[in-house]
Image (cartoon, rainbow, N blue to C red):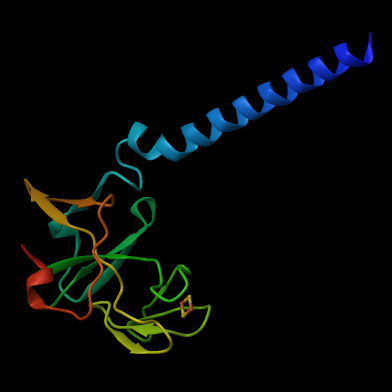
Length: 154
Ligand code: FES
């Protein structure tokens, strides 16, 4: 094989590898829309009756918590910290969220109680159909503070 022939072959192979890599990236990016029920689409959290007032329940496939407030309102809180994006666990023993990265603390409404987080946890729109809680994880909503109108009444 001549040097020119080898260079043509190597350039073609590199181009094909780039094309495959781009196709894999494209597929990964649009995967949530291809699989309804996964993060990035509408996710079923279950029946309203499964959530007692005053409880916080993680829904991992949707990356959110269902927070059923004492006054019967429901919030879907994104489990992503508003500081630098760490996943925030709910601490049942403390009845609050505590971020493991830089110690931001949030209450059951997602309000900041301490730490560097600049705003409350983001929420997702909720729709209740035949008693089922459907959470639209494609549209996170940023908030400056908690307002009772953010909770969906059940
Ligand atoms: S990422 Fe949560 S406090 Fe920094």
